[in-house]
Amino acid sequence: MEEKEYLRELFSLPRYALASRAIDLLERSIGSQIYLRGIIEVSNICVKNCSYCGIRRDRKDIYRYLIPKQVVLSLSKRLFKSGYHSVVLQAGDRRDDYFIEYINELILGIKRFSRRQMRIVLSLGEQDRDVYKLWRDSGADRYLLRIETSNPSLYSFLHPEEGGSGFEKRRACLLTLRELGYQVGTGVMIGLPGQDIDCLVEDVLFFKHIGAHMIGMGPYIPTEGTPLYRYVDEYDKEQVIDWSLKMVAVCRLVLGDVNIASTTALDILEPGLRLEGFRYGANVLMPDFTPKEWIKDYEIYDGKPESSADYCLKSLKDRIAWNDPGDPKPYGSYSFISGDQ
Ligand code: SF4
Image 1 (tube, rainbow, N blue to C red):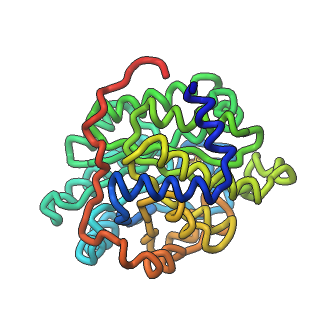
Image 2: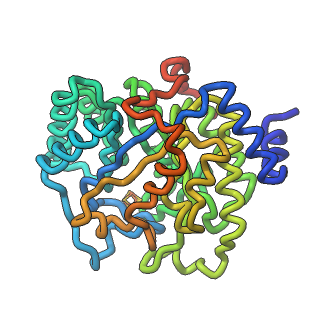
């Protein structure tokens, strides 16, 4: 059967049938451990203006911050000591020399105090190759860069300032990251205006062809004060819940032993849905440790809860892999892919 047809068929299955197949595969391939990554949202300053994002450049009504280096370092140290062996440094897109050096010093500092045991995951958007290389050479292990949608027209619609080249630029960044030896994570938003099952099928194939080691997807959450909010009346919450859980299961079934996160945005759709993600094949939990003083200004979407991971940690306690960086099993097993999808 042709791959796209097979994927469409998977999406047409009842959710619970998909879940049990995904869990069966997860347990047979990498086991049922849940890996942890502690997130620190180090800055909400961003040069981009994505039409769905609550911290886009044109939002003038939010306080912009950069957390002092020493605060990030001591927080990372506390996380490491408490059993988190992966830390995610996340921020908006920023390409100035000061920020590049700030990140570089954080990477060196974290590697120093953890004797290179703590994995550093960067989620810092599109950068030049030289910057990716500098951070990689300093010790960064992983990079998360969501493609947001693998459909180039939908991508342009979401990023009107970037013209037609935006999608290709982002895709090229992912390939550069692969080439530089990062463990690469990507993902999409689910429930975007104009998106359908065929778009999601293409998204899964994109993950496969790019050779992603990690997948971080989430439902699109309409956010007031953003241009995309004008489509809020078309938003079908039940369908977004259905598609979001099915995407986790289908990715598990198609991509096998990659790491898949169950993300915070699921809990906005419905409290408890993030935990549900682990019943569909997710195996990564990413609690947010941004200090209270700053977390309130990192609202990329409306209603972001401050500590929704706590109940997941309690419910999943027997499966949590403390002190384990949780490297993806296929890391290094892909050959570099430079051709067309
Ligand atoms: S989605 Fe990311 S790159 Fe786009 S505006 Fe928001 S923070 Fe910036």
